[in-house]
Amino acid sequence: MEAPSDGLRTVTAVRYVTPLRGGGSVPGVVEADDLGTYVVKFTGSAQGRKALVAEVVVGELARHLGLRVPELVLVNFDPAVAAEEPHEEVQDLLHASTGLNLGMDYLPGAADFTPGVPDVDPVDPVESARILWLDAFTANVDRTVHSSNLMTWPTSGHQEPRLWLIDHGASLVFHHRWESAADAVGKAYDFRSHALGSPGLDMAAADAELAHQVTPELLRRVVAAVPDAWLADEPGFGTPDDVRDAYVTHLASRARVSARWLPKGMP
Image (cartoon, rainbow, N blue to C red; front, side, top):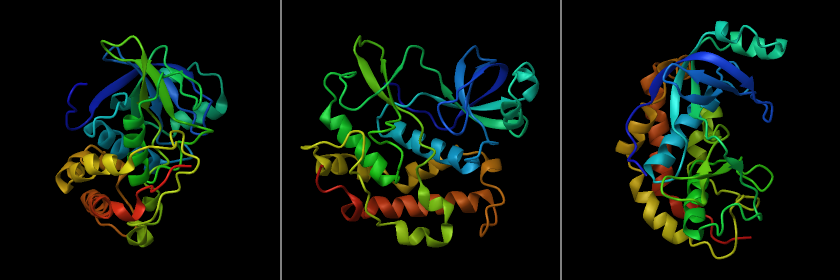
């Protein structure tokens, strides 16, 4: 796997291909001026810009920790490129999303991972523990047996599919109520319905490997990738950098008290 670089590339949408109606946010497949194809999540969706903030923070953190996440890019979007989209509600979404949105590299031929079905044979217990650790750390409530938000796709040099992490917009639940964020620093994670929860995962080993890597320096690099526009006008904060500092403070504090929220046993 290539080493992650700081910041996100910015591309411009040149063609809106199709909406994806599998989720409530109605992302769209978009072609961009770099000849890439991306699944784009829009700022005008019901989930709002905080879902995109969570996508960037958790996705880039996962990448720095050595987990597979499709490349994230910032996408300049002009609704004019989707003028022929026939659905009025989709058009409303696109017109509410003029400007900067978030794209994820489209993985052609990727398949949804279904727990208990051998898409990946076998599912690596070490990798499973790392993913579960990340989800516990970031309070991801949306990687369950009902919706794994995992894809299987071959990587370079491997014929067998490998797990790829997607859709982290439901993570970082603390940022929806900043006034009580401090109370959530040590909050335990309910992993009972997690897509990869299984007997025998060595969570202590995952914690020993990953927790010390989540330094304030790394967190500052990660939150720096979030555009100012998605952090502006946050109640209780003066500037986007003030909001970034709050993310760093919360997550660095949570990393230091992993014993309080680390899953202790598997279902």
